[in-house]
Image 1 (cartoon, rainbow, N blue to C red):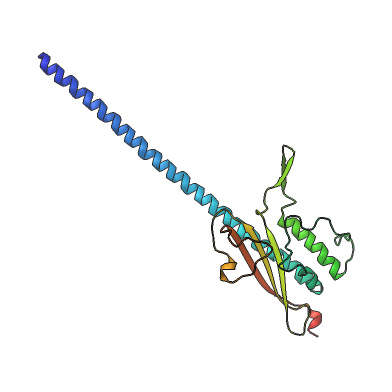
Image 2: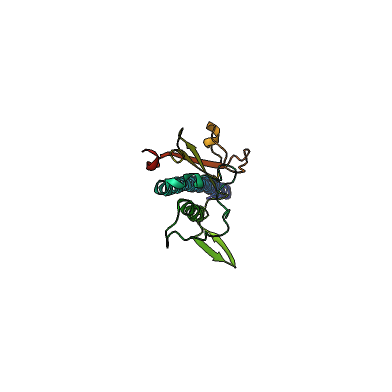
Length: 212
């Protein structure tokens, strides 16, 4: 083989090596984009799952209150006394009621007071907490949750009518809520907060003593 031939062959091998390196870089770049896409998809899935779980929890909390209302319809006006202006949540009821209705008999008003305190503990996730570095935080409560109970009595009746249980909290992503359809504002919710979520559950509650 002549010197000229050897030189051309050497140049050809070098060109082939360089071309293979470019291919490897392109493949690595495409793989990195694919991995980022998968990670982003997983993140979006986790956020959506979190939002769905919180909405299911809000409905469950509303159902829990309705069970208390149906058990004690004579105290309905006491449950809804705070209305929209003074929402439950965030430790609004500082002290436990003096009367423990699990241990002794209570009047309708006392049971309503006790139920509201217990229900707010559920709203705030007070029974599910973790302590780390001297600080205690709940692990299931929704951020900035507020709840209101609104009662509209039937004509001529005191404890029979439509009850709306409204729950508001701050979610992780923008969404539409009941306020977009003319719903009521519970507490001091910020109308400009696009991450505000709201669930309104309505039911008809009957006090059988008023049907006679």
